[in-house]
Length: 72
Length: 567
Image (cartoon, rainbow over all chains, first blue to last red; front, side, top):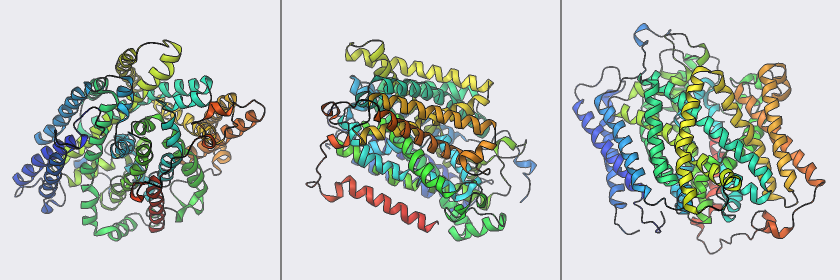
């Protein structure tokens, strides 16, 4: 984004959203580890846990790299 | 294969848990917060309508491809993939990539250098007010009608999938969009589109990953499809198109290459202001050229999250889906395949992410429509005809007001469609009437300096008229399908391709004929608007890795490789 307006980069908001969602999904996945929903397939793969973890990692990287106040 | 068991018959396809609802609410809160944050930056006309022309190539490129990645698009094309097989990917590959590269390398410099605010704005500079006004009025009118139709269609989806009340979906989502677009203008729309892009990928990517694990990879999926649907062809793109009666779409390869690849997609991706506006927000010419090319790589990958789930549905779902107009109570439609696959693999949390992706896609699409409408109305209709010399702040204010007014008209249209369902087909068809001939008019204007003012207008009018005529003839008398689509087997998608091709040819022929009998404009008036009179950008000093041409050629090579792999 251009420097004219000094807007917080959109990537920071993307990171923030991914981080929040990652935490919620990971916690949900862990809570259902031994009691997964019956109507969902492949629950033995625990997709919520590793997908939530992936979102947390990506979200954290984006939030750090594009944090407000960091010079471009 | 068995009919749908009674246990699956329900008023909704999926049920949301508390964490799913929390994920959806967080999304609404964040986009509203971003809208209010961006309001302080949208103070001038250039800020509000073109996001200050300060977007990087990546942001403009993602917004460009995201503006086309609405929820109905995702649901509809996943349904088409279930119905027609991998042939539906033509709309993402040959039906998009060459056009995006062409926009970046050939057309974008003219749009950008002329400093126009819109596509009708370019027509005004190149041809004059006649062609521009025709284009602006039809675009503004159709955009707002389309927005209403999409609003209704999406509310119906939410009702069927989630059991949400129709009025709740329409009012809450449209008011949210109205508030954040009226606040931050194109800044808000683009920020939301980039957010939506990530949400869609992370919300939908698990479906093909888990689906391929369940089926044992691509070959396992193909084997299951052949086992479930013996004798039917769903997994090849070009091989079944040697004849229209050998594929479920009823299409001949000529229609795909020329109707879709050369006309329909070129028209949409290079002249539909809804998508072009995103690229006009780029910070310089090179970014504007790169943006659609960056977008083309992501567009090429979209079949992974749209087409593949449709194919996987053929392989793993324990019942047959049916066309929307034939669905009986207890049966699921083709367009339900994506939510069904989402429900198959995604438990609480992941389901919320997937549904948020659909909601975000819907809202981003609506934001795209109203921001494009506000720009064309303010700059191409209001300013030239109603109030010429107002201060910039007046036009920004007008943009904010007509964002809200546009939304209310869209809501009205949505309720109108609710009581007159056939209107939906007509409005969706109407939008296609203008795109193909507009491409002919814009392209001729950019490449041939001899084309005259009146030739642009009459060519466009003739193209639109022929498009409407062909549509009505094919709709009300099937004998005309054989004439215009060269086969009585042609399905609506194939008919639309042929309709686009004939409309564009009519536009070009009439434009050339009128040009030959009218007087051209002097060269000095066309500098920066026509290829032969515009100084070309020199990129010898730019490293190869930053050159649009390099990435454009790479995108086309990848496209060819994909066609060979899935031949």
